[in-house]
Length: 200
Image 1 (cartoon, rainbow, N blue to C red):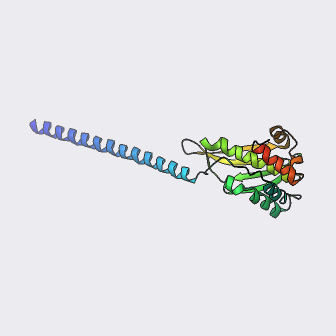
Image 2: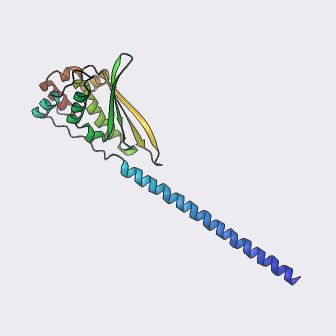
Image 3: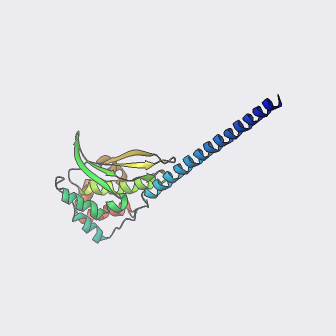
C-alpha cells in the first residue's frame, strides 16, 4: 500500500512539474509575441515620414521660378515632373507617384504617397499637401482637382489608406479668390505664396 501511495505522489509531482513547464513555455511565447509586436512597431515608426510644417518662401525670385515651370499640357509628363520637383513635393511627401486622369467632368491629378505617415502627423501632413495642391491647381492648366492618398500608421502598427482631395472651388474658398487666376503671372503666383504664408 505504501508503494502505491509513493507511486501516486511521484506521479502527482511529475504532473505538477509538467504544468509548471507548460506555464513557463506559454509565458515565454507571450513574451516573444509582445517583443515581436514591439519590434514591428519600432520598425514601422522608423519607416514613417518625418513630417514638419512647410516653410513657404514668398520672394519674387521664388514666384518667378515656380511660374517658369507652369504646365500648359498635362500630357507632357516631363513638365509635370519638373513642376513637382521645383515645388519640393519629394521633400514634403517622400516617395510618390503621380497620375492625371479624367474622372467625369474633372481632370484629376492623383498623388499616391508611399508613406507611411504616423497618425499624430496627419494634420500637418495634410496641411502641407493642401499647400502643394493649391499651387498645382494654379500652375497646371486643365487640372481641376488634386487628390492625395497615403498610408497612416495606427497605434497598433497597422496601416490604413487615407485619401484627401481639393478641387478648384475648395481652393478658392481657402484662398479667397479663384485659384486659376493666381497662376496667370509670376506676380500673381507671389500673391498665392503670400496668402499661403499668412502674409496677406
